[in-house]
Length: 445
Image 1 (cartoon, rainbow, N blue to C red):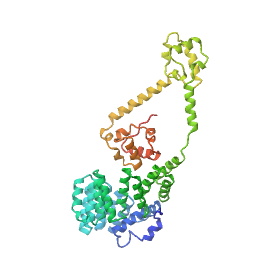
Image 2: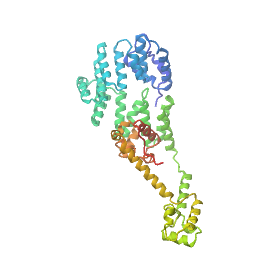
Image 3: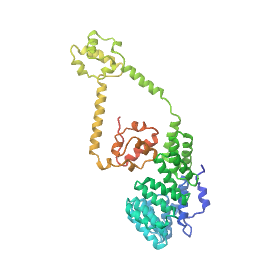
């Protein structure tokens, strides 16, 4: 895999957002790709923006606003671009920022305004289609596409937007066909490649997914999501070294990328799984203690006979009976009780401890059930797709037949980690996503 674009590469492109003449839309997209190819690029670009952010001229407001959009500071971008000079770039980037903040009506309104300043009609129609799709207005999105159907044999972007709309409607086979047509018209269409790879991965065609992802990685700069998804696929296939290369590539350009950092640990643990001998020995010792026969201890004849009649033969049996139950048995008195307590004290145990644990667990289950009934049913009935998880986490939930948030929160961390290829990275991702809905996994502690 080739190196990601560095800060020097940005300079070599000589795309100056703040030049006298505003760069073209294509050049600004290239600049955005370069800026977000690495943390050092982002920091350097952010410093440029901060130096100019106090300037209030119409041209300065426009360029600074576009820069803020590139950095992902969408609300600030809207405020600044709105004060910029009127031109197609102003209304297109305003539309992009409104779309990012899910203000779809305003996004469409500004796309329409851009036509009055010379914006390309096909591009505007396709961007409006994307806005309608994101707003789940599939009928209007479809009508927008039909209005430019005469471009179906020449425009890769047309087929890409058609595929995205079909995918949003669950027409996955048709979507894949249109992604492929887009690639026939434009072999390096990164977005079509990415979504085709992602769809192949979700449908179980991992080899095809890897091939498509590798095509994207061979270009510069590669999407971080591509490298992450590729790493997941490689790890699933047991190709840990290749997965590590992908993660290393991310961390070299984005050293503070939290998902990549966690995933790197996940890969390392997969490569160095070991048998915890000390933990297993503790389990064995505990079992041995619980299975120890009462006959191994010095008890009075009366105590021994009483325990035998009560079918108590081991230390473990004593943990399932209370003091009151013992004392209620005929001929079992305080003297016998003291003998039993001395035995259990020597093992740091006491009568009825197992019963207490069972009652505690039952109480916790009751609390969970009460919480479930009191929770907003609308939230619990939401699909797990609303969590917007990575491919691996989504696959594991599919294997566990987890379809709603209500079903998911009844699972414990241990149950999820027991799923094949489900690691700490995916667990942390799910836990974080659930907190956004005020939910959490079931806890047995």
